[in-house]
Length: 351
Image (cartoon, rainbow, N blue to C red; front, side):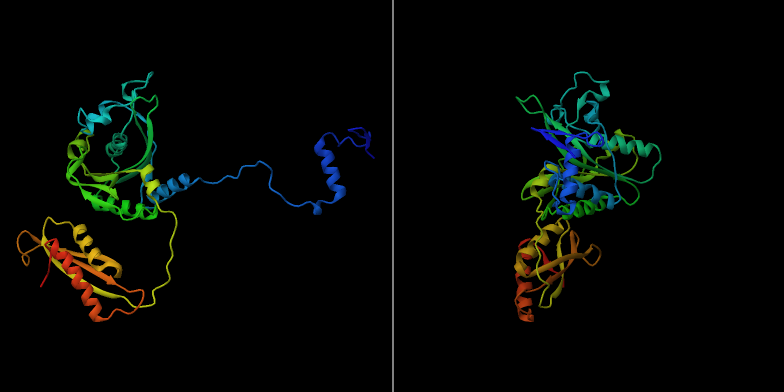
């Protein structure tokens, strides 16, 4: 019973429910038939979902939590004295921090360029409250001033710290390796370093990918833990999240199940006691080539049966061909190539 007057719709008095255009549209749809109107998404509506970077950081958080670490959130502004507590040299470029114009006090007067002091403060607080075992992580922001720029570079760093009876360098290394695997950042190297000012010179490694430094892991220097009044071993790691995001390989590659059996050979090697296992692994990888499927270290021995200054390192090497079954002759040839590469490092087969 609605009537038209030009572009106007005249509503009868007995239809007080028709007040707006939406009511007219609903009335038309009712007569036309709701079942005849196709379902469509709302025009201009946003579809909520994680960005690739948010997904990446979610993997980091979930991995850390699954490894037993608890997440913390600390202030980005710290005291200049914190740099002294982590043994940062007086002329180090990381001491050039953004100064806050209206700080609440000296303890919050600059923006941090490194997240380790914040982690150590939190660990020390837990230690002083007699928490026997603590493992923490933070996706922390660091602020690096840029010459000629008004605003600093804000970078995201994953900082981890832990102490306890079972905590050592290798526990933290296993956590970092699991994280790198989950992030699809493959073939990272752990290179021993004695030049990191905040870390123990004999228990520290720099993490690199294709020659690019992406992080550091190690036992915190005893002088640093003493500055925080902690009488225990503390292990920490720091990873550049921005670099890891650029280096990650999110695309998964699937290969069919192997058609041919594998061959496993155990190699017990004699080498200098200061030779790293990674050096031997690289030689095995190079010698085996495409036939190498898996390599695992299962024993390191030093004792009366080994010459002084030497050690025995044993690997289990799995070989497989995608095209045919490996015969004894082919397998022996591959092992000979592996030994040729190992001998270049000075390692020999244990008799």
